[in-house]
Amino acid sequence: MIASPLLEFIAREHPAFVHLPLGLVAALPLAALASFFPKHSKVTTGTAFFLALVAWAGSTVALFSGLLWGRQINLIPPSGFLPVVASEKQVLQKMLQLHIFAAAAGFVIGGLCVFLLWRAWRQLEAAPADRRHGGRRFFERGAGVPALLMGLLWLGTWGFSGKLGGIMVFGNEATNKAAAEADAAKRNDQEADLPVRALDYASLEPAEAAPSRSKAHGDRWRRIWVTASGIDDYQAGKPLRPGAYAVMATFTDEKGKPGTEPGPLYMKETRADGSTAFIFYWARVPESLRKEVAGQDSVYWRSPDPKLITCLGCHEKGGNK
Image (cartoon, one colour):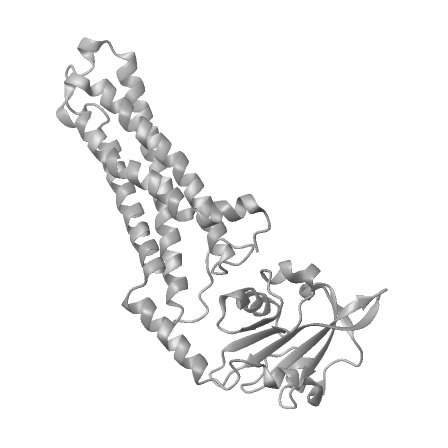
């Protein structure tokens, strides 16, 4: 979650921040081409350099706002820079990855373009007016062909990135199909509205004799319960077999001891196909802690919800616990 109102504003206005530099980059090749004609070469080269410089500065703001926006809508992990694709069906996350790669490539190409235009402009500034084009072939004049090509590449990468951004906002056949499949799966899922098995954790096998602290889960007190089919694997530090799951019940702290007020409930399950699924359930979030869950007062997240991507990444590195 983004706490600062200023950062929230920057994130929300990402589409606006993108259009200004994109418009300047679209005009850049025209200014670079105009610089090849001797009459106003110095002016048009300077214009091309100015357009590129402002566009590159604007692209910095656009990239930053896009990162904040991706984190705000939970498509990018809070400490990450790219969305994590946990399933082939996550069309939006895969598209966002391409969107970011294309934008970053354009940023690098744009920086090189700015340098080439600055160098060409400085050379024209230093040369006497009657010698600015003397002996130069056509493609060496003004901004030069390398700068023109960099400008066209910059426009191409940012145009592609912008196209993907538009698809993510307005949708296309692939994103609409993925959304329809996710909606149909939820309607056919008996546990879509309530984590029934997770709530019945007391009927499972206790993996610990007494509660202990979990620094990875907000430094809360926790106790873990595992299905009979998975308790031996869990205690041995092995991956749970298909069909097995573990539930972690957490509690508030009372003067260094386990409290009685329940915290969030976590569940990790190994599905029949070997993939890992997670549940995060917090029936009543205290007002003082709602910033941890994007301001919600009651939370139920289930895989493949992008909010649980950090769970997947952490457990892949650290095993069961």
